[in-house]
Image 1 (cartoon, rainbow, N blue to C red):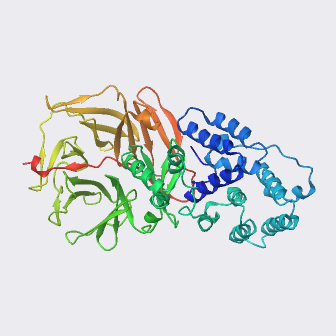
Image 2 (image 1 turned 60 degrees about the vertical axis):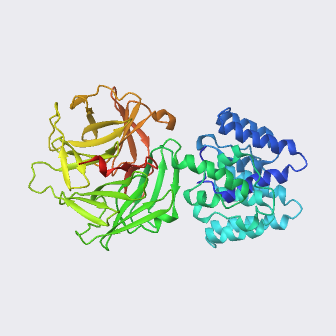
Image 3 (image 1 turned 90 degrees about the horizontal axis):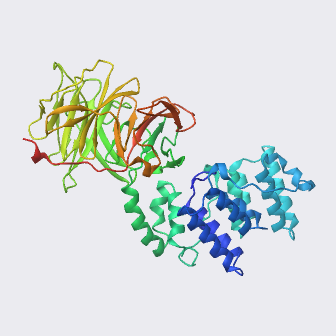
Length: 518
């Protein structure tokens, strides 16, 4: 379910459900039917059109509730109301510029029909804003005070405010002293799916009922294999965000934005790997808020975006971890093991090949070179043990070779100019490169010139099988094509300031076992 007015917050969800409950306290069946509509929508027993029809009927005569329900609706299915434009005072508010705004004015007038002075005061606030006598922040503060005791009006007015200026309702709601939060778990699921990362952490602290539901939801959330587009904006305080392409939802995180000055290298095992000027790497998991800092004196850390190609893996059944960082400028391969706090450099200078990618398969780190040779990274002796493979493909200097671990198989992808030329499976029984004619029930996700991931059963997350999804450093779209056609694809985000894009997965959690390699 996609909000048209920004991300749904805990406060917004409580406020809206509370306003419905209060409005129908003498007609409880309407409130119960409202909860059922939400549950049916989440379970996909009815679609957005069906929801729209049922809400219009259920809340007939309550235009503020109808408009407020738009927070749960996809943009293309927003509910619009018929309007009476004959009222002279409503015409004074026409500067708001939308039918929704005029409908909201009608609701305010109806609520304050016995206090017309307050309605006139509200119109004056709008005129002052239109004439630039006051700014958005002043409008929000005045409306919050003016509509005190009318949560539905405050909630409805938030629809016309940018997210940064939306009125928060926490001070007017205390879930520990009321039964407003004892909602059906299906409804809690709807609310959770609409929250930002920061609100997800706060959700469990609302009440016991929400904490119990959150524990179950959180396990599933962290295990989700839905690919997110990671976006870093330059020259913007809210530097980092994550985009769900299929839901057209943007997640923000205040935790990540504290590190907007750090240089981004990549994402692995759910962690963002970044570098900073104090000669260190920082590993930050935005989904768990865990952070690890690795200092080094073994080499000079390059503190610029995409200076490294990285891989993070954890010890089998252990919190110990390995960080592999390939410096693109020097072609040096640096490996850090937390168990001994040490860096080892696998230098490729003077070699007839250079490592271009690495991946974990069966607890072992495999590497591929620019010559399409495959090797095993030995964590015990600082060596790369190359495999003797037959059928090694011919590649050129403009080729981009990437390793992909998928369904227990080691795949090699061959890209050129963002187009997938071939995919090979490494057959360990015959030690052969085997060219694949189809990806089957697999989709590839490629960040131009950088990382490539595979996802089996992609339809579960809204993506197509046998397809390739490509995002480019400077593109505003995700190119999509299958092995049979070439289609130019899905929107990622409107262009604002310069940015970089990458794929980010919350899962899997890569594990290695150094005892596997001799």
